[in-house]
Amino acid sequence: MPGGTISLGAVEAAGVRSLDVRCNRCNRRGRLRVDHLVTQHGADMQIPELLRIIAADCPKMTAAKVHDVCGVHLPDLSTVFL
Picture 1 (spheres, rainbow, N blue to C red):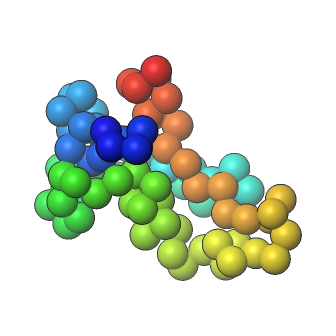
Picture 2: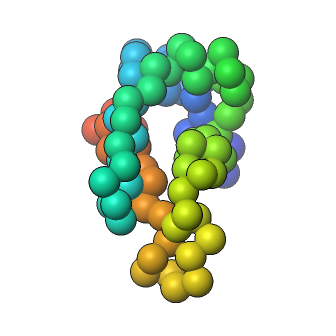
């Protein structure tokens, strides 16, 4: 985990099959299969970059006020990588 970030490969190696994706600023949520993410983006894809890709169409990604910025996150990872 270079730079303290987690890669999709590490998530897959930890046995995580799917990820719950949520935003703490709006109602957006979903579930993504890890094997599909690895196929699409590669095992080296870092989670922060993946989150930017997932939320790219969110209008809050470029909010002018810090407290309005998109809050996309993967709550399942905290239980796996703590």
